[in-house]
Image 1: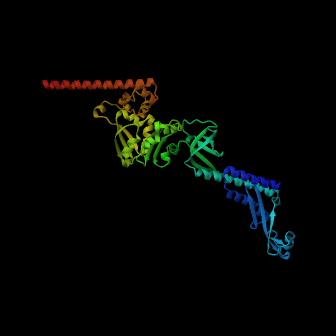
Image 2: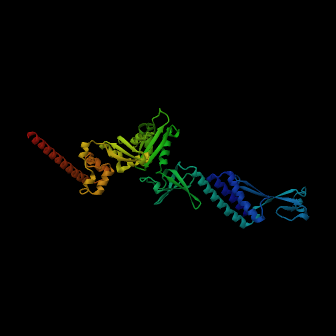
Image 3: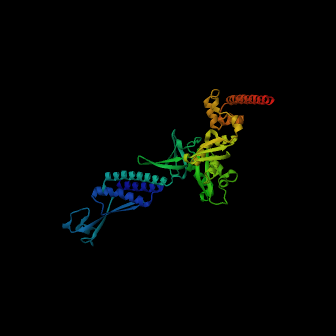
Length: 439
């Protein structure tokens, strides 16, 4: 039974090595340590024992070395053997010679062998954890492909090609991600935590590095180092801005990243659930970089307040909503990308300014939450609302058609009244001037 236990232990080690990629020196060291432990328990010392492990054949041999001594000097059965006993095995042996004898597994007893099996399983588990931690610690920031195994409310369990368990938390998933058991999924290794001495591999699809690695896979110039990704800002699943720089003047970094007819960028957009990606040229010129970051809007003037890390960007009225973006996403990303807080202003002449009214002035007629929605899409004055197409207002604000029509009606009436008052004032001024002339 002991021999069968020995074989089973060795078989388990060979199997473990094949599937967990444990190197042979580590394999042999662990197995040797396990048996040296039971040797010390039985004989008190393992210094005169040699353990030979053959992991390929599943075999193990234990040999003990003892010194041949005169029968009258024999005191230690572990390190010495009487001359008379040794010569029964080999007549040529003499005092002070070394005597080698093989120790069989059954000599340790059933209880010791079972204890060795438990120790071996424990060491295998420790090796597995250490190897998994080392492997994925070295792969932080790399894209891995796995299979969705189980879906919970707060996280998803993913298995890699070796069956290792990886965790994709809900917060690291794109909001529009939808997977079911058995689906293939791609993500990056974000970090490796230790919980109760067990590695917990955390994946992410929302990290900026995931987008950077996807670009590296799709764009050979990035992989080769000809084009560098300088900065990334993302709102996963919604929009992203990527600043790139080319180290070769002959290569257009934006064209290289987008590809012929968008061939390179389209695959990434699909992977990120239709996340719109703006590729812009990086520059150390802060004003120019801020202008590019506000793409697709065209910026007229940029005023930088370095001390406050704040920027005032002046645009034509029809460009303000583009600069802000739906729900403010464009200006938030530009802020992340540049590191400056960006304030957007309309670049209008004094005459136009006189005839415009802040939306907050209509709070007695329009609910404040509706005003906030309009301001979030860049419409913070009456003129900006009236200048925008009705269908565009409905689409971008997600307000009901009746609500939009009512707002337009209120603002139009206010403008007509202002214009009427202005015309009346002009007529009075003209009459006054005429009276003065007649006098």
